[in-house]
Length: 226
Image (cartoon, rainbow, N blue to C red; front, top):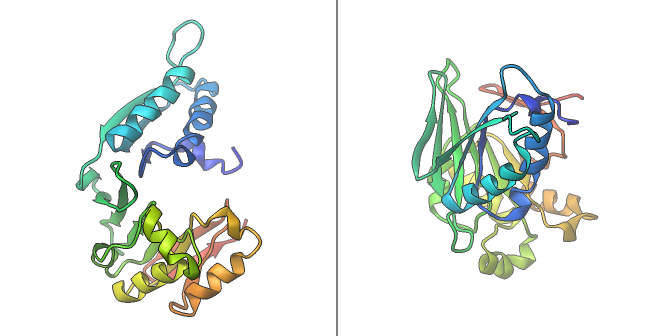
């Protein structure tokens, strides 16, 4: 609700079925339904089969009124590696990631306009050499950085990245900007440390806060004041 534009979302791309990435759908579905808009809001949910199953469970509890009249229309599209959504202006491609045994995906968003921008969102993943190829030349790489570098062994075991690994991918892929997210709560009081570790390797690294907005163009990435 604070983000405002969230109520205009037409497509949602799910990376995997862990509840910390899914439970927010319930609140979003409810908010969209309560608008009682005409026409009824129509949202497409893209994701792996297990993620879609959980999304449908949430939607079944929220999406209709007591009279049975649908207040929100949802479509579900199962994701496989390759192009998952395309318009005349945008192509979205899914790629597999390394996060436990369930179907997990990251996404590449590429515009088809004059600037031909490329934004890569890793989702939850451990290190893979293929991430360098996927992120090659990206205008912005949004990468998880769950751990500081001294917990690399833990990161490998549970399928996550350290801030240093994210920065190394950014360097090898020649991206223009790296944005870190999904930092473990154990670093809530030491986020500067996570950022500093990454910036020591890749200087154009950002650690956005919730509700931050950025303009991404061929000229660079700029923070948009609130």
